[in-house]
Each structure stands twice: as structure tokens, then as C-alpha cells.
Length: 246
Image 1 (spheres, rainbow, N blue to C red):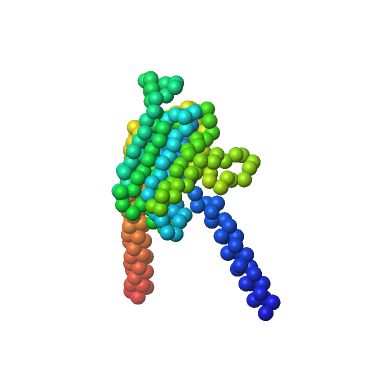
Image 2 (image 1 turned 120 degrees about the vertical axis):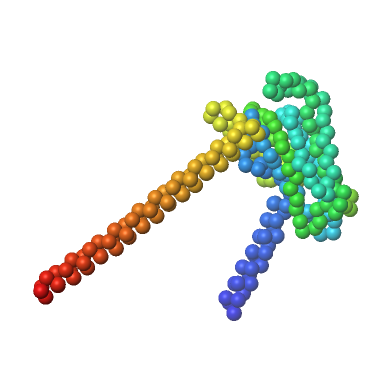
């Protein structure tokens, strides 16, 4: 009886902990696909969960930091969503690949033209962004999530180091250190690396095939040698017996 009560109490405690922990993770967040290195380019996903049981998420607005503007922002087409990219004039022009950039993307808006994100589901909203700043460790993106019942959740509170996470934290992209040689991969570099990797794979496969063929030949010759040797021994034994009988 006592064991049953302990088990029941433990289960109830587990459910309570789970219930308390869920809201901490159920917010709009941003994560890179791979690395987001300073000075480079990255593809990032804004993960948007639906937190309501009776409404769908029909709109997402992501505001870009003005203190570290990004000259290049390209969304990926998404079925069921209309995408609007808003650009604004910069107080201080940026220099990108030797060219002066006088405006940058300040907001990207996804609006559902279908069902949106229904209750019990989440969706990822990908963007290609760059050139990432080199003088900061993170980028803060403030986001607004709109539901089909007209409710708007404002994910705009900036998390502070050493403090508890706010109720409505803004998505924060952590930037990794640039490579030691200061080289930042471009799409051309990635294609070249991919071709090199394919060639290396093909060479490895060829070497493996060659080695396999050599091993097979050696094994066949070895077996033939054993058979020939055995035949020779048998012939010698028979010849010896014939001499003895004679």
C-alpha cells in the first residue's frame, strides 16, 4: 500500500514538473542550420509552435536588429504562406564585397493563405542571412505571433545573462567564432568542397574495389596452390606404394 502511494506521488510530481517545463520551451526561437560564424553567412530557422488549443497561428513578423543590420536576407518559399520582406534606409551605409549598401532588411512577415499552424503543431520558417557581424556574440530578433482569433503574442523581451528567462523571450541567434584564417565559406566554396568530397569518395571506392580485386586474386591463387600441392603429395604416396609392391 505504501509503495503504491509513493509511486502515485512520484507520477503526480513528474506530471507537475512536465507541466511547468513545457511553457519554457514553447516559444518562438531561432537556430542555425549548421554554423552561424561571425563574418559569414548562415541559414537560420525560426521555429514557431502553436500554443493554443482553439486557434491557429496565421502570421509571424520578425524584426531585424538595427544596431547590426544585415545586408542580405533571403526567405525560402513556403507553400501556404505569403512572404513580405521590408527594407529600410540605413543611417550608416554598410560595405559588402566592396559595395556601399544604403538599405537593409528590417522585417520579414509570413502570412498564412491557408490553415496556418494548427493546434498541436509547429513550423519552421527558414532564412538565408548575412553577412553576420563580427563585433557581437549574438543577434536578437523580436517577433510577433498572431493567431486566428486575433490574439497577438509579442516575443520581444531580451533575455539577460544571469537572470531568469522572461515570459516572452525574443529569439536570440548565438554566433560562433570565425575560423582562424578568417575565411568564410561562400556558396562557391561549398560547391567546391562538395565536389572535392565526391572525388575523394570516388577515389576511396576505386581503391577499395582495386584492393578487393587483388585480395580475391591472391586467395584464388592460394587455393590453387594448395590443391596442386595436395595432388603432388598424393601422387608421391601412390608412386611409393607401387615401388614397394614391385
